[in-house]
Amino acid sequence: MTDIRTWWSAGRREQVAGHHIWVHEPMGSGPPMTLLHGYPSSSHDWAKIAPALAEHHTLLMFDLLGFGASDKPEGHEYSIFEQADIVEAVWDMHGIGATVVVAHDYSVTVAQELLAREAPITRLHLLNGGLYPDLHRPVPTQTALADPVQGPQLVAALTPEAFTEFLRPTFGEGYDFAQDSADIYAASTEGGIALHRLIAYMAERRANAERWVGALESTDVPLAFVWGMLDPISGAHIAERIRERLPGAPFEALEDVAHWPPLEAPERVAAAIG
Image (tube, rainbow, N blue to C red):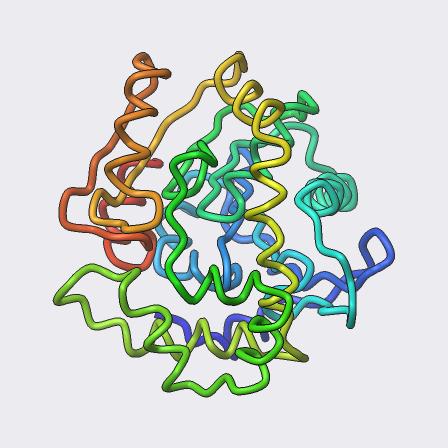
């Protein structure tokens, strides 16, 4: 797999909506496919599956604001609405009129906002994320990061070792996540750390649940799901709701995978997305 520094060397920071957003050079050929990453990582999450997907699609991959090699403005109030604005602006800059979208974790909510806007999405693949805020189960570190006192303290004391312990419960037992942890740590600390401000998305999901759940359940865009069932944050308990509310949508259950399907089971994820 391409290491994160090599990954970043294959793109550039572009001026988007008043910020510098890192965008990977277009990869592959065929209909456009936009890959949107999760928290607290970056577009590098897609590095293991991008070569397979690029056989059939032209891939658009970038680091959202506050993540990876994109800007992390000090004191900024990050918002899912703003991230959706950025996605649409990147589409405009790259001449994307319609696209398949693949979204994981944090970005499932960005995708829900795009659905609410009736953005030009031709098909939406969703991977583990808090589609239903009432079922979302944050790990203790996420809850602490969201606290206005504890959050800055945790960020100030962040080390690679502490970060690994933060991530440990989110990966499947027996999976060697050492390199993934190092890459996600690099993404989280490149150019500053915004983790405690970005985590506001959990409250934002709850505040906008009617809009975003409604968009998911009423859209005409074809939906498909690839889901790590061992995920303690958004695993089998959310899968049950998806199957209940969206019974017609294809659902690929990865029974031995936790929160990170594109990292833990890249071949199966790539095959499911196609």
